[in-house]
Length: 389
Ligand code: AMP
Ligand code: ZN
Image (cartoon, rainbow, N blue to C red; front, side, top):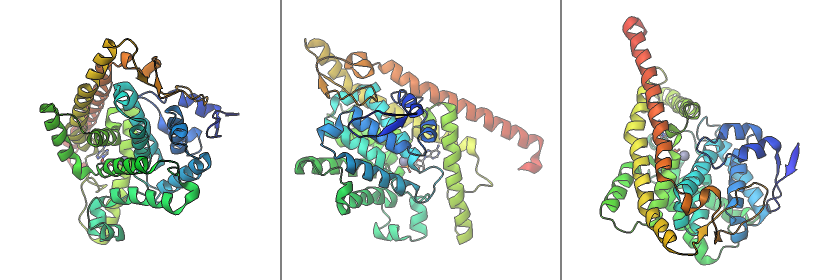
């Protein structure tokens, strides 16, 4: 039933898990199925697999015992509040989505190994110990965390701070122990920037700033580019296939409704989308897609084309192109990050901007239409039976 698949991590995966990991490079990757097959360890599996594939365990001499202890604690932190949405499956989903964006868009060729490590690490930790309530709820209820962070990016500050404390206080979990001082500082700066930028209150500013960067054709700032990549992955489920998107929406709304129940108990007004009796799910999702998700993917894709096109041109001019590479199997075979030949889906010569744009565009379109159908049915029912309003 079980096969040892990795010399580096010493993890044994079931055959089901091995089969599922074959799809880790795909947009339609089913993280829920991986979570079921792995006994609620989707985050552990995805994190190990990607560190291994990008050869980061070797490159940064990550002690495998520390990696195991760290990921176990990470998963425990994600399970602390038993959230329907902000749990270890969401963290695994965002980490796998970041990986897809890195390889399919070609942007991984623009990044150093440290930057790739930073974004995978940031994705895995970005909602650590999420309480299942929003920043606004923390502020309104004057929670300890809100008091501690002066009402600013309350949860995001906690996610990154609590993880660094974990590494700092427990040497046996310190996966960063063999980084040089400079590497450690650079990684930390990037991780702090990226996780803080997942705060939705930064969204419009982040999009506006990137748009103006692109118009002025200025060189794009690496931390800003990485932050936009992580933010996009964080809100990407409306661009996935309907079954995945619908499941994420139901989980997120249940989390919001539980907050609404607490707001009612405390005599506070309902936060947006938190009243289980009156929230119009389909309409709110159409709004989220139109105003948030689609513009984010559009700017991200423009940014990527801006960055990667010159790299492709440079590669086609040079005789011995240099590709950044990662190993595509979960058999533990390591491949060098830098190589002189291409490999499968992650070579610069196979980057397909049109295909990349088409994938998310098509799913967004289909999901919007499905929500419109559902919204139409509800309003039709309400017209026929006004007493149901
Ligand atoms: P995070 O809390 O880091 O997962 O940031 C993403 C935020 O985006 C969530 O807290 C939600 O507020 C919001 N979000 C994600 N998906 C949806 C959705 N389908 N509808 C409404 N809000 C969403
Ligand atoms: Zn998140």
